[in-house]
Figure 1 (spheres, rainbow, N blue to C red):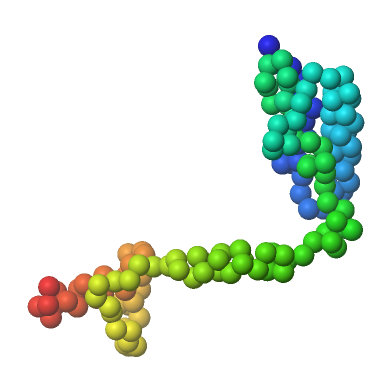
Figure 2 (figure 1 turned 90 degrees about the horizontal axis):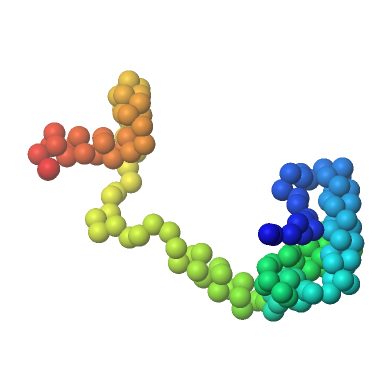
Length: 145
């Protein structure tokens, strides 16, 4: 039978100051419960920092220090990724820039055209792709399709 291990649940909390106070309270409770459990023995830490019951191999939870809510002084010490790992930041930028729409085999020419309002409303009422439908209808009418 699975034992009930200490938990640090924060999914129900928001960004208010009251929620931050509640998060710190829950963390202190989790920290105290985990330290009591660790002191009793029969548990060990895996390579990712999670506590595991030695006898069963059951995952108990992360090290409380990993889960500790950040305080203002912790946040003040943080630095931007570009400053700490500039090469990684550049590679992420390159990857993002590389993505996007695939190149079309036939490119359309952007034009401005004046249409009666009821024509535009008619095509827009058909939903997404209304400009492509106008293009398709013009090709049919002109004999290009």
